[in-house]
Length: 393
Image 1 (tube, rainbow, N blue to C red):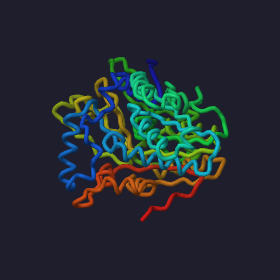
Image 2 (cartoon, helix red, strand yellow):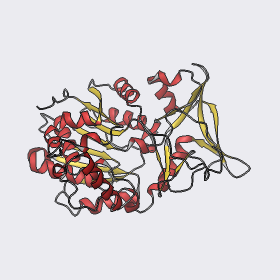
Image 3 (cartoon, one colour):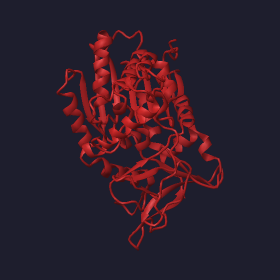
Image 4 (cartoon, rainbow, N blue to C red):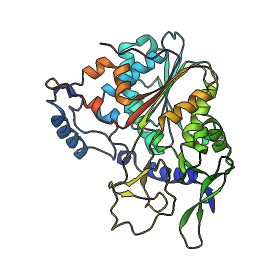
């Protein structure tokens, strides 16, 4: 590690170490065989009991909506892809960023093969991941499936894409849908501080002579941050506290918009996170970083939270909330081809693009659907050339 580096590079190194662990320890999978039969539940209380069993008997750390609500959540994403490519008769592509265990790709391809064989027959599905262990797990999942001839795999660091050091997509007119399910929260962020509209600073991490690392602020010179702030001036408004900026997410979005004209996107993630659950008796060290708007949750493999990304131990997940209105503003202002950019609450997105799938998850007794009611702190950013679908009655 160099003596001084941008915060996003330090965060990126910590996340790379976390995701270098065996894949089965990181991304969870429910071990229950009847976890998709949600309509048989008797209501919210019944779901909570099943949910607890899922977590007690899971393999891995986190259970995502894809894993919890399979196949319904992925079927809705598949239907979104159909909507985003409506009218397309040529070859098309789906790129999934941060593909987890490969479950989402498998279920989407299953659904498209069954319901839209004409689209499926001309489709290439590419999973992109920076974790070698997840990359291998995705191959194990999909190359042994019926879709082996439809899938491709790329091991790529999205920070290199954001900094224009490598390409994610070649430039092409091929109709393309990019999916990112809970990937934004794990993309490295930067911190910026505005002393005034003209005096902007970026945070960096440096090693001290005393053997620990600390955060400092220096004049803003990073080209990517300059481009972001020019597009989203809200980051330059002077505040008492600095602000976290999802610089890698913004850089990736710029690349996608530049490389593909016929582009649809759906990115789902947390729009809000609760404060960390800290055990102050164990928090021996004071934070070496400055509290900033949009603070992440830093948690280890045992579920223990920490107050500072600099002083947390090894193998910690770092999860950021996403300011979806700012992200949508950035995407809208960065487009060369006019498209529809929308932000949905996740439940609204699911009802808009998959009402029949939502209906299949509702309790026969109370009508409760965990697909809609859980993950209420999630939103979805969509980019489409077609107007948003209307919810079916």
